[in-house]
Amino acid sequence: MKYLILYSSLSGNTEKVAMRIRDTIGNDIEMIKIDSETNIDFYQYDLVFLGSPVIQWHPTKTLMDFVSRTLVRYHKSGDLIPCSPVRLGKYAICFCTYAGPHTGVSEAVPAIKWMRTFF
Image 1 (spheres, rainbow, N blue to C red):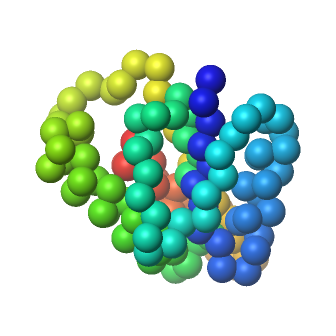
Image 2 (cartoon, rainbow, N blue to C red; image 1 turned 30 degrees about the vertical axis):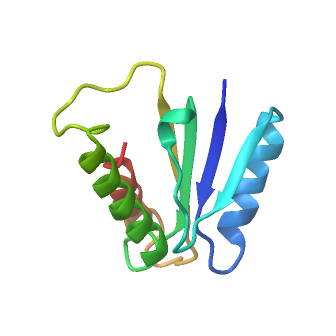
């Protein structure tokens, strides 16, 4: 199985979680911190982890811009057709970090739901 961890991290907390995932899996796994130049083909991987801190109920702008760019590229190339079935053998896990004790899960859930729409 081929693994990929993609993440955005502002304070380093999400990066720590990404590193823990990498260390736990223990196999050959690619780990990439998303920036404005990140360009990757998810279909090369069997399992993709996508992580971000939560900023006002959303992933970071860096991650959202990356997702938007990637979706446009896949749509233009014909690799992703609207309403198409799930690709067999391809899986994704979304994760987030947050620090707001007053919001907690109620802030994290919308961010995860946003990220999962990509898959």
